[in-house]
Image 1: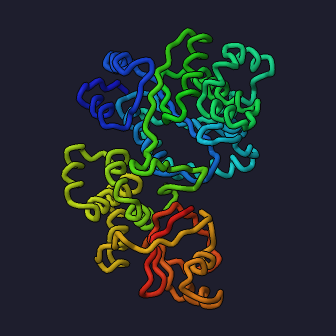
Image 2 (image 1 turned 30 degrees about the horizontal axis):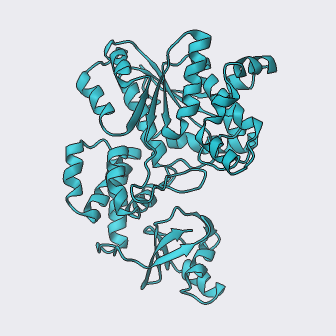
Image 3 (image 1 turned 90 degrees about the horizontal axis):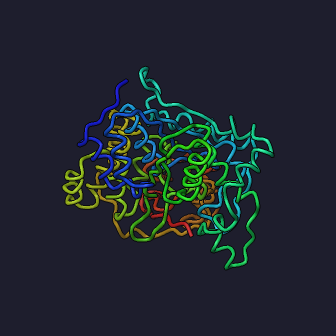
Length: 401
């Protein structure tokens, strides 16, 4: 398969606003791409949760765009590094995961990523790899050799380590090993480009260092945004269980997007659709309700297909009788992100007993984002922002505290 070097098409990828930084420089990478050289590009995710969300989808869509240009695309499952524990986004060490937990999460992931990467392309299919294939085989002698390329001072420059030292929070030695192991992924893959979130730049640059020293090869790092709420700074997070999840069926996904705060509309349209930017400006002028509906439709269509998006749209409009959801819905504040339908209904205060709550649910009087839940003991994963209907008269917007 030949490599596409069309400057306009490449510029559309780099200028959309998803890519935040390129190391060493954007111009150096563009020159490489315009040269026609086929590059090997990868992104890695640790299966620390069964949940993948729209921020992951955004990254996979970007990887797919590079693949469609003719480059070799690799989706790396960090099944080994997940058992070490990446300290990013945390003020303390992550809980270390067992091999069984990791394997269970990976099984759930596969159907989700198949919606976004074209594994059926016979000429240039993406590759799915696991870093346990090489990291589990490293000897202690080899790990010591890798560690010799870094200093403790370099590791301590990582912002979360600096914060922990100031707050007298322990830093475990296995956390120092994490950047080393993620860095070695680049060596094992002999990669040209790594895609990562801005929170992973430190680890990705560790890989750039190792690849340069061990193979005398330059690796580019493309750091992408994390899809944060522009007003609150809140991020989608698989480990915290917040976000719009790729495992959601179309109707639930559509409703979850409609439940997102208004300030997320542009973020969703830019990152999770490929509508032209000038068209997005026109959509935003429609007002929040219509713009959000357009975002929900386009995203469900991208992740599933147009038929599923149409069905989800019709379902949502039917449930809410084509009436706009009030922006000033009363909030139902919850402390937990995972609870049973029964506990959620009881927390609302609408009913006075467990038997009343159970009866309301079993009779179809409990909806969340337009989806009726009829099993009182069904576990529900909450992100915050969902619209809940109880009976005919009670509507709430959930808030997780």
